[in-house]
Image (tube, rainbow, N blue to C red; front, side, top):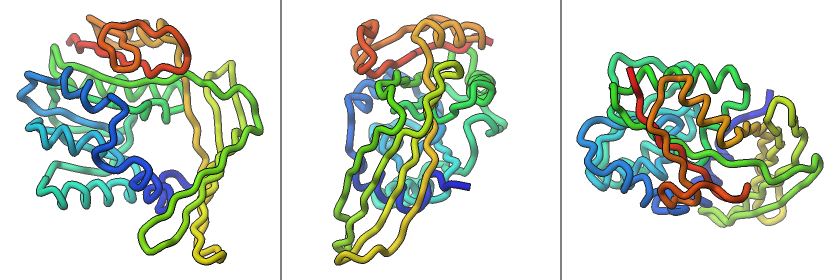
Length: 252
């Protein structure tokens, strides 16, 4: 079984997207969450790239992730900044808590990691169940732009201690009928030309049509849906390269 957000993957994420990194989403989410005084939940919080600035701006945010390595880095990032949020290990489609939130946020297309349709629908049911009546749901989606199996990219990062971590990503499968793609990510840690460690990760991503996802949200108890492109509120997307944010209200 291939790994998934394991040690090298988490380390690369922390170097490539350190706390403070924003694609325009941090500012957008802060603006859309303004005025919320209750608790907020970030499923699949990762290393805390979004969680930390939300906390530092006075919001009360809990987070969870299915990767122990990601959670460990998130806890470290929070501790270094004097933050002590509630963090726990769980999956988006399986978590269960005895409380409801004023908002749930899932930035950066993380929701699409649930590449099987039924798993993604179970997760939406979980999100709705854990929102208060009138609670806000914010989620980012992306459309696929790689349509050729076999495409490969190579990136590298110098990390603490002088080691080099390389990442080779190869598209292995594109399923247009079931709307998901699968890539293999090969991480390697090198020092002075010697291979020290390696990980192979299966990275699957789902996609949705814009109006398809609006309908899915409506069918799962959400209303007042606003679609935004590239973090411009209410701007409908015009091309597949844009980020797409859905904002919706839970109706109980």
